[in-house]
Image (cartoon, rainbow, N blue to C red; front, side):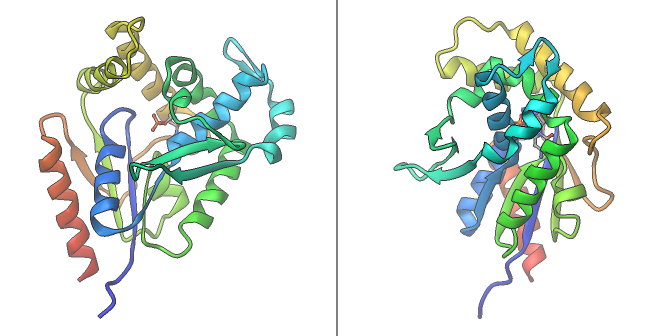
Length: 230
Ligand code: DC
């Protein structure tokens, strides 16, 4: 018998391991994985490359005119990993750097950017069988998702994880305190913005993974998935 295909929405704070667990689940159950944060990051990179951000000011009229020229896609590389492409260029590495990280909340707070991204995300999930991670997936993008999880961990733990990740990628200039400040500041902007602020959907399961191993959280998520397809 065909297995029931569902929509899985994973939301939560930045750097809490959402994407790691979302990717692992998608691979295990043969679903597509969509990292929506990467889409906001790609728009941010586009703005930086086109000189549309000065300090904390975004040139919104110009960005609005450019929106139709910004094409974001995901391609699976030779190792089976999904990578982000912006207008025909692989930007997977660039969008994870500190420059983009420090500006992305400004871009993700803009209404017309969010509406464009949400429309694309809804199109990608039309046929279900998808694991999508972000901030507003269970509240805005797929309010009817069969499984919704809201993931969090302490700011200290999240900064430690992101710091290790940057170091493993060869970043020797960013300090731990800068990473921690960035995590705290992004939480503040993401939760207090007017457009789709980060919040737990009423019917989402809360997962605080500060003290969970990767295997533990993966098993937990897999079991929740199994209980939804019965
Ligand atoms: O998950 P991430 O750290 O790559 O997300 C980057 C930024 O984009 C973060 O500031 C929150 C924002 N974001 C959002 O507003 N909505 C989403 N669905 C995904 C990310």
